[in-house]
Amino acid sequence: MVVETIAFALFALVTVGCSLGVVLMEDVWHSALLLGGALLSVAVHYVMLQAEFLAAMQILVYVGGVIVLITFAVMLVRTESADADTEAMRT
Image (cartoon, rainbow, N blue to C red; front, side, top):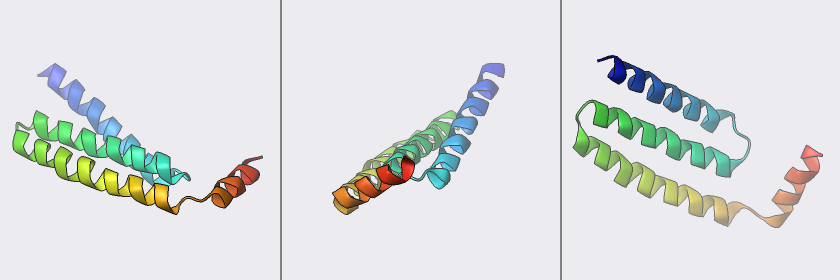
């Protein structure tokens, strides 16, 4: 019982941390990766609740589909001038 509580607390922290990172990150690519981490940790919560079907659907639909769409959107939207402007702002 203690191990399950520790595992729940650990993955709850991962979920909240990744979710905050999605909102607070300036780079869209890192935000998309953190969204994948948050969605995967939610799938782990489903497994801990013994809802394996929901966990599988979470991974297939959200992590598989939505993250791939976000990745393509990020790759299509980013331009060289936007990257140069971002680098110029950081220095």
